[in-house]
Length: 166
Image 1 (cartoon, rainbow, N blue to C red):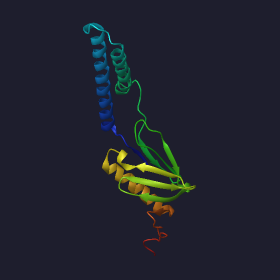
Image 2: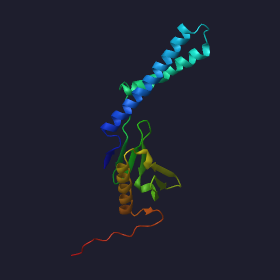
Image 3: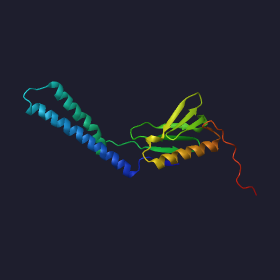
Image 4: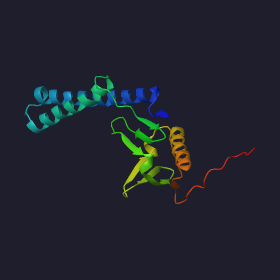
């Protein structure tokens, strides 16, 4: 199962926001720098450096907003052997092997995977922008854990029995 967490409309909104932030920083820093060079009689080196820093800081969001640099895909991917996900456009990919999962703690906002060796990996559902998509991811993990017999919130699922015996 593969789920794209930033469909086209949300990705366009993110790019537009980055473009606007980049323009704001770049134009604001440029205005302040021009003001220091041409309109203020006394040159203030600290203000000029801060203005140049704002301009440089605005270049990165401008590059993402104009697609000179590309966002990473935000996704959730689950197979019978593992699940992997990246919840943000700048985050790193997390991979969890089902064989390593000892227990799950599922709440409304976070899914905690208790792994072999005492490690804990958290999937923060509030990082997924669409609430229905977050519920879908949570339910999919819950069902997969039940199928594998993994303890969920301190309760061990019973062995599955066929619903209808002929």
